[in-house]
Amino acid sequence: MQHWEHSSYEPSLPITEKSNPITRDIDRANPDEIVQMLKNCDAEIFDRTAYLDSMYQKLNSCSMVQTMVEISKKVEIILKDPENSLIVLSGCGTSGRVAFLLATSLNRWLVALHQKQIYSYIIAGGDKALLTSQEAPEDNPSLGALMLDKASTGKKHVLFIGISCGLSAPFVAGQLHFCLNNLDVFTPVLVGFNPVHMARSEPMQDFPFNFKEIAEKMSEMQKHQKAFVLNPAVGPEVITGSSRMKGGTATKLMLETVLLAGHEAVYSNEAVTADNVLASVRMNEKVYETTYSQIDKLAALLQKAGVSLQEKGHVYYLGWQTLGIIGIIDASECIPTYGAAFEDIRGFISKGFSEMNNKEGDLSCVGPRFAIAHTDFVNAILPSLTDKDMVIFLFSVEDDLNEVSELAKRVGQNSSNLHALIHDLEGHCVPKSVIGMFMTALNITWPSSLNKHSSILMKQHWELSTKWCLNAISTGAHILKGKVYRNYMIDLRVTNSKLFRRAIHILQRFTNSTQTQCETALLRSIYDVEELTDEISSADVTQHTLMANQKDRVVPTALVMLQSGCTLAEAKFHLDAHPVIRNAVAAHLRFS
Ligand code: F6P
Image (cartoon, rainbow, N blue to C red; front, side, top):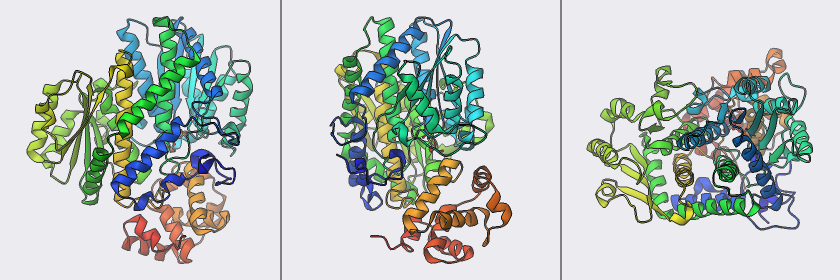
């Protein structure tokens, strides 16, 4: 049994908020060790050992496989009545981005089959949230319900898939509640990675139920096949609470399995069975094994990215097709996760918004953060690119290799720090002349046995593999830059209620102070005051997070105050002297 599965391990926390024992010392690890830890952590997604004393259901457990089969059968029914039906995927942050990726990819595939597009996605904060962090709407259950109501107008049958890795987002809870009140039209599915009893029980803004109550109701309705909860335990995240990693990965592969099984039933006459579902999960496990078999090259890329960030250079992902989207998503997540500047790691997709298929269309005029085409990179970044900046091309043998070579040639004139993640097929590989243009080429040759000759499956596997690689590179680079303490991202932005609670927990974890002391220190730091006023003490969490959104280093400042008993001004002075969070915190903590 994994250490975190014991009931005594961090008992007050749900799995998604626990710290993973595997990565406890990741901040002191070298690049090879970091990749090995990531590999071991990701292996937990596919854990198939059934421990008698474990209270957790895993992805391969019979009950989860059965739930996937039942949801796939609902997908099959929806696909047979495309005029009146819709499948809506929704979530916040990474969960919403995965919803977008799945909905747009599957719609594209339906179009290729000359079928009606039946997928839609909702992301809290709208399409801007696909590229930038918009955390506050996550706290709004009514907004979630409203957006779902609008997206499904006129439909008779809606399969709603609400993703909240932590079983925690009020935005998704509002949507599920709306579905539960309209079961004649909606079949709600909740996707997450905690057991129902660990769902969030904190009251929500202007809403009569908490997430746990909604999740319990969903479980109850599952007995009548009116609702479903798909919530295997995949273990705590590499960086505590960072659900962009395993949570996002497991969401993607699980939902692809479920949705494609439904498609195969309709278009290939292949009945939905537990064996087929398990075979699909197994294929994804093969993708995991194949990707992590490149541990040396992955570690080399991670190290180079770390050096770039340490030297105040940048990391740029230049991707083609959906691999470009994976790059954009990975880059955008570094801002809220590591407090990175938006220029630190950026992603670009060859044709920009015309390839995104997002609902709100071209957002490039909104601001520089939304300049995502390769031409934007060439015009705005290339002229000042230097060897300090790392550029990683993301493409497959199926992309326009002339275009790839042309761009590589241009980039190579300004920087030799040019690398590539390449997906080849057995018997169909990128020529050596192209590979030779890159300092490091991590190329994976995929066997045809893995894609069952289906182009969508192949692309999904390439996306998954690319996600694992980029998550490793960006996480590793920030660890090497000193942004992580143990396996906690201490300098998190406290921009919604979940992050407010997480911040308090981190303070308790590292200072042994009481919850009240931690909350007081956090509020002093957020409001920049030595003494809390009555007005601050009586304000609600939403107000605190609105204020915190405009401030830097609120958690490290509170931590130093609590640890040393110093004033706010002294804590800020100390942090100014130690820009590397790990060093600043380590200088103040005596930790066994
Ligand atoms: O609020 C921040 C965040 O943790 C994101 O990083 C994450 O992607 C999002 O919330 C959604 O979390 P969940 O899937 O648990 O609702």
